[in-house]
Image (cartoon, rainbow, N blue to C red; front, top):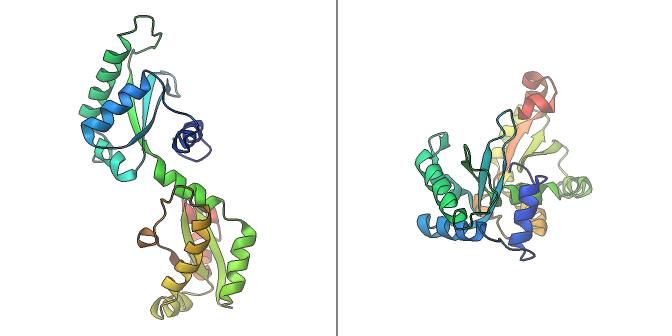
Length: 219
């Protein structure tokens, strides 16, 4: 689960909205994981990973990013916890001999729902609303308001302008204006201004160091 367009995200969103619920054997596994590590598990998905091996996979979708981090070790997933969850899943399904699940090479991955939900909220802000915000700000030095993966960058024309507006308190003012729009789409109340931030940058930097190319800029 990487984006709001993934089927796992859409299925988890329906669970969060109360439209569907986890069924056996995944409800039992989710309850066990939640109780064992004191986390909130919204969804558990069984599928097969892409690639040549097509190994069976369990996707554990936690509600919060800090809960998902409990299952990481450095830059990788915690192997002991992966193995423990895979073992528990096998124990649960073996109660039903006719379960039909392939468990050869079964592995477990983890992701967080709230981070993608925040990005989805941001994506719902229309270009018209961004243009209206620019008109409200009415700053001739503001070139563009750029958005990518939930991040927001107010682009001025020059580096000098960036320094100027960072020093005179405009960053918090602009952040609050943008955040007031974002909250309209924050269905699950995950967005908090205390954790919200915007960036200031310049068209000068964009042109000089990224060849005026948004792909290079966000790469």
